[in-house]
Amino acid sequence: MRRLYLSVTLIFWLLVTAFWAGSLWLPPAEKSAAIAIDKSITLTELAKHTAPENCWVAIRGNVYDLSVYLPEHPSQPDILLPWCGKEATEAYNTKTKGRPHSPYADELLVKYRVGILASGKP
Amino acid sequence: MILRNLSIPLLIVTCTVSLIWWAFPEGLSTARTLGIVLGWAGCGLLLASLLLMLRETWLAQRLGGLERMYQWHHWTGTTAYVVLLAHPLVLAADVWPDSRLLAWQTLSPFSQGWPIWAGWLSLLFLMLGLAATFIMRIPYQIWRLLHFGLGVGVLLGLVHLVLLGISDPVLPILGLAVSFLGWRLIRDDFGLAARPYVVGSVKSVAEGIVEISLKPLADPTAITPGQFVLVAFLGPTFRDCGEFHPFTVSSIGANHEICIAVKALGDCTRHIQSVEPGTMVRVHGAFGTFLADRPPTPQLWVAGGIGIMPFLALLRAGPVNQPTTLLYLYRTEVDAAFLHELQVIAKGDQLLSLKALATGDKAPDLDSLLPDTQGFLNYECYLCGPPGMVAAFRKDLHNRGVTPHQIHFEKFEFR
Image (cartoon, rainbow over all chains, first blue to last red; front, side, top):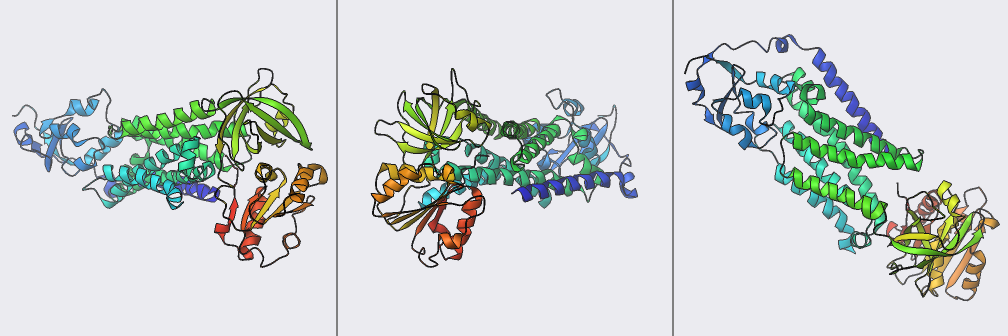
């Protein structure tokens, strides 16, 4: 067991180091991944996407299609589902418990961005 | 017997599979599903491991003995560690093809806040605690403290889940984990489960070995020959190291008075050599199945040094019922505790054959000690002594065709 412990611990730290090193040398495609999608989405259009399989959420002026991500969200589905089709910046910033989402969550959101929320338009 | 052998594996499988079944994610990628399943598997294994560290006689009886529980406790703990290390790595690997940055942020606590910090702290506590377990040369007190850190690691792992927003079924599991840790601390380490005894007499039986008789002050502990008890000496004029030590019982009197033999192997046991009659003692147990359920076939008993105690307890309780060869090995004549008494018992018991030998500092020559190459095939063999001696006899007996089922031994190892 001693040998097993030493081997898996060493492999673990080597892989953690590899993930860290991998994040430093980003391929050009990933560096430009955050290119904005400038499609303007109104609150009315946003409100049409309320189903779990068609869930759009507006956060900090952007609109995200979270349909694919919903099953991956760590907490219970009933925490996120009520925000489908709505502006959810406050809920995102506080997680309804006064705690903000992490930078990791911000990074994760980028993948699901479908446009910007049209300001002042119904 | 079969049910007793299967009890611990069944417990572990039930704990682990039920958690995975309950929390099995749907509609995710294979890697993410695997990462989540690994996390829950580690959680179930750690919960089983906590249950297996409890020192309760009724639990040990149902699960096949304390030694067996401890072997499985080590196995489940180490396996949980392996799968929990894989858990974040597999989750990071899941997003690696899409984004290397996201893969690193999946792992990095600096990107994710308290939920991931709790996960990392849990892994680091487990890492340090297991390092202490596998590095045997550190002092016992430091080992104990670091091993206690494993419990903190388990709790932090559950806090990691709560902070992620997964409260069900984590809160009941957290309650169970806290209960098991508290149970172990209060009933076992603080001695609530132990019974009060008092030292009756202290007798030197060999160099660095004393035999101490203990009289019960309340309901006595139920003990059979071959079992061991956990003993703490608690003053007020005398105190040992403030913890329970395992000692094999060397005799059980009709008035429930028991004797233990203590060999000066470390600081604590050296200090116990000077204990005086009247000292208060707490006794927890009894544990051990070493000589239980012996079949009516011829037997070979091999004892090395202080390893004579379980056999002595059995012989003091009455004559043997089957042809028995007792091979008693000790370093020098002054180390041969109870040799004269054993010779007297052997002289009066026709079924018992005693071979006693001083081996010096060299490893004993097994061929000269056990010259009959075929004669032990139908024997049940019981080994008790230093790990090196037990390993050498196991190998030798195996080479002579004795099956592993016929060889019985206890490692008597509590780290």
